[in-house]
Length: 140
Image (cartoon, rainbow, N blue to C red; front, side):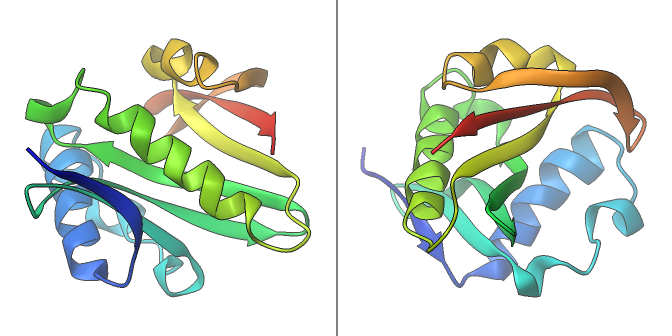
């Protein structure tokens, strides 16, 4: 099996993955999932044997790279693909001039996953699309 993770212009593949995970699996509304910011973002796509399996996007503001819309298809969870996806996001963000910090909003059940990748939680728990989250960050 061949895994490829990196920047992509294949936004349609990313939107299809996000629809499968966020809209169909987690019940997030289309209006909340597609917020109109995709054209401002860098997109990272994970493929296994050429098939899209996970994605994320990165928005930049000031010195912060905001990683979001992180999703991996159920059959690929627990394989290390998600960690590879986050590492690719961090590497891509670190190459952008002036970016010194990565932030994300983690679903509370995934906080431990992000902690293993160097993120630390801060601030209170909040609901995003009806799902409990906490903000997390790490230096680049």
